[in-house]
Image 1 (cartoon, rainbow, N blue to C red):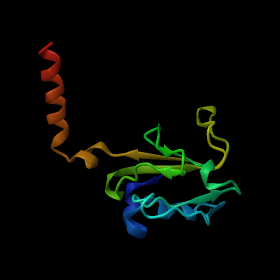
Image 2 (image 1 turned 45 degrees about the vertical axis):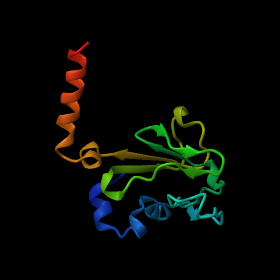
Image 3 (image 1 turned 90 degrees about the vertical axis):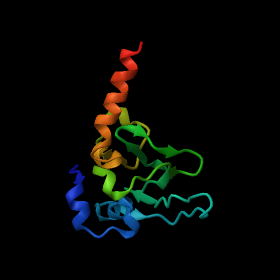
Image 4 (image 1 turned 60 degrees about the horizontal axis):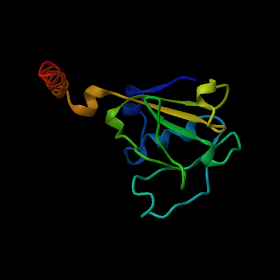
Length: 135
């Protein structure tokens, strides 16, 4: 499992600024024929079958936290390409902590500095310190 880092994302063409457009480049991944109406899927989840498993067998995570909508099998939040530090796709031999998935485990690592802006992090830290000192 080699993660795809942000600098790869800026070089490779991404359809619609959705990182999921790069997933079919991985061996064993094929687009699924599953479809969901635009009103149920406004975020634009793309469906994939990995190693012959149904698209609902995949487990999407953001920084290790579950990011799946269980009823329709959608990804809850798709971060913009600029906010992703790296993402990795494991298609087999993953640890027991990922026991929910039999297809693939897709983990997105968000870059906090890009997600919130370079200058906002110290302000958040200052606010936290202010709140803690007020107790």
